[in-house]
Image (cartoon, rainbow, N blue to C red):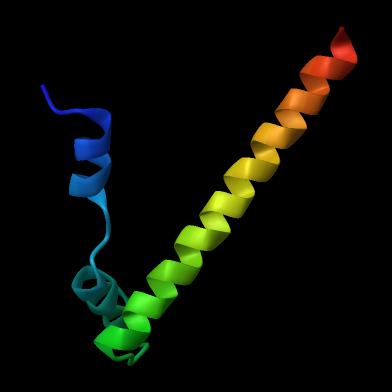
Length: 64
């Protein structure tokens, strides 16, 4: 059985994979740029998830 963190790490997009996808879509970037894009997207995703959780917590609190 794979742990949840193990599954997350296994499914993580590598800079090389991001580079491949971006190039396929017509964007020429370096591996360093691809890594920075992934770091930005991870931060953005964390902000979005935290906001959703905060909103959910407020909704639950307002119902009680």
